[in-house]
Image (cartoon, rainbow over all chains, first blue to last red):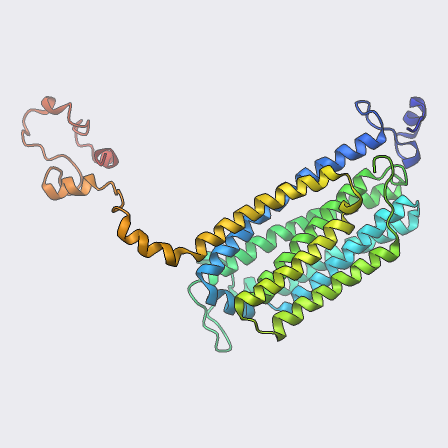
Length: 232
Length: 161
């Protein structure tokens, strides 16, 4: 498709999206893009299977300890924090979509703006998670397993299986949170590259795949939020 | 599809975001205000979550306009995860029906208690060492089980099989 002489490419250091030329083992840019995206989907499917293990654990424990699940979910977790974080993640997914769209129509300023908003949303999510949930929980001893050191309050007496619920909560949300953290890192990398005009109508492979990763993080949270915070 | 990237309109994507936020509000409302029992509320929450997930995958992740190979990857993954969840649920919710049947028809578990039986019979002492009836000739019982090479206290686990 694009016929840019090789020396031209070398001069630019493949920096600008207009001069981007596919790696030599691909026929054209489109093949390279398709293969990269297919690989990303394969990776995302392994990610979904990783989390499916946690959902299976949730199913087993919930059926075994239905009462504990209902009580613990309402006592330990504040749905308002979860709901705010859900809204923030959904908005960040939208800004990610808009960032890719901006690259497709070559609005470089809008691209950088939407990436910055996406990163800020990710940081907000992590800040709310650590500040309003993880640190107070650590302080109160609401932790999994034998480290559980919570005596209850407001008439709530922890059941024997509360550490199990908290174990699932901590593992699932912390692995999800680490994905948010990695996503923020990848988005920052995209922002730096966007600053060098690496992404444009003809080339935005990395941006697209980071976007897919970011949407996956959102996708997992769409299920974690009601299961942990609401229905219990 | 091959050589054209679909460029979605900003208006369309904003409508999708609006749907997602509405669905989130609906999740919270149904979970807090409507009591359908723990299972009923769970099903409602999962249905709304599945709807939201479909919007994110189909439009935010561009799968609707994308190469169908990518949809196949996701489909495979969903079938696998669905299998895990389905069979786990069937197993966990049918224990009550199966356990009484198991109690009558299943033979007692094959516990390897040979060591305990040997101690009870007096063939081994309480430490699991062989009780040597011919204490004076050590070289004779080499074929027994190899635990008579001196005072072999550490070989307890060898004795039990």
